[in-house]
Length: 315
Ligand code: BDR
Image 1 (tube, rainbow, N blue to C red):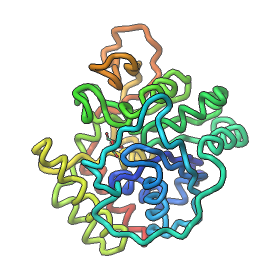
Image 2 (image 1 turned 180 degrees about the horizontal axis):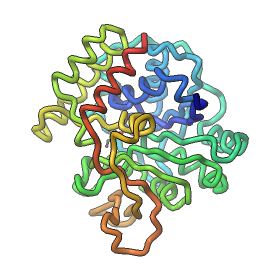
Image 3 (image 1 turned 45 degrees about the vertical axis):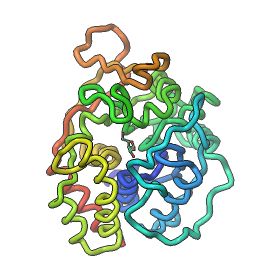
């Protein structure tokens, strides 16, 4: 049996990320979570740190450490998404105030110190959120890039274009400078963009499967996604809403469910019109370095089977 992969998670939950966290938390033999860094994004940091701790407690994993990241992007004011996720960022469930503590160390120092301490190539960054905290860690200590096992991130879009502007995906738009630093860092990067997450629709039948599990995390999954999908159902007119965040752990667990290609991806950081656009050289028409494994397609049936089976293991 192979050892659990050591991971650091950055997250701004967010209902879809709650489901991603559940998957990571449900499988301690696969994921050794060294820490969760709460990020400002879908909602302010005051709420994402609370939401993260509530979700850990719901999943019975208050042993996992939660750190506070930066309250704002590297160079810009914060843009949030209450219009999707609700005023708490995690509407659809009513969870008790968390009692587990926040760690005193900053999330940025935690990322730097962990990567400098652990053997090179042993820790993977699992980024569900804007890349602010990883960007700040790289700015502080560029050497950490060569010590990471890799970065697996829900970020960007190319064929599906933007969801927060016509050109940009939310996580990259919130902190394009951080995304740019990560993409240029030399770390081994896997990107799960809207091109794949838009294939993973939470149809009523799929939400029913979570509800039918009957455990509290299955019920919370169904309730949370029923809330957050309303905005997307109206926007896209599809049979279900895209379920973004869990694509990251699903890819790490079962890469055979996905199709990717190594290409160059570069972020626009200047243009007012296309700020945060991830320009993906899909046809390899430039000689820019192939810095990303870009995941373009996935198997939605296999994805939902995996999520349901995994969340069934939680309380
Ligand atoms: C991303 O934006 C956020 O609103 C979601 O939580 C996800 O991380 C999708 O673009």
